[in-house]
Image 1 (cartoon, rainbow, N blue to C red):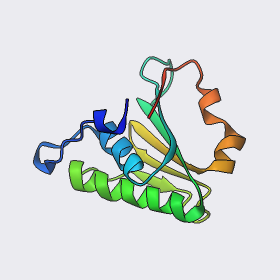
Image 2: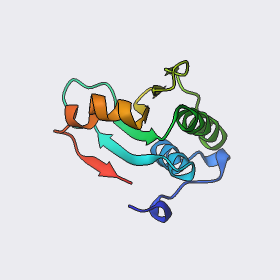
Image 3: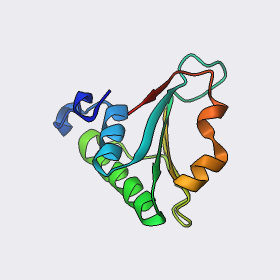
Image 4: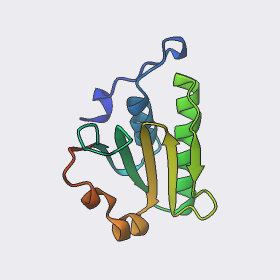
Length: 126
């Protein structure tokens, strides 16, 4: 799926698909290696999906995180239930209840290899 194939509903009154808004926001701010792990069919998992991407620096990771939160709030009126990792900027986790957004610095993402932990789930790259 390319940037243009993601349909984001720009009308805040009618909402918008949360996953699409998050992914489009990451694309717009040049997130690196964006992917979605679909966890809906995995037993004993409390989330529908993980959306993962990398930033090239602490500043880029912070920018991605801030823009996702601002854009999601603007388009869907949804606020995250929790945000973790802003202080060091190596791995920021944004919790949208059933969707968890992981924004890593490239080195940190390579170290944790979170996609390999969930290799039994379908992974879609953007």
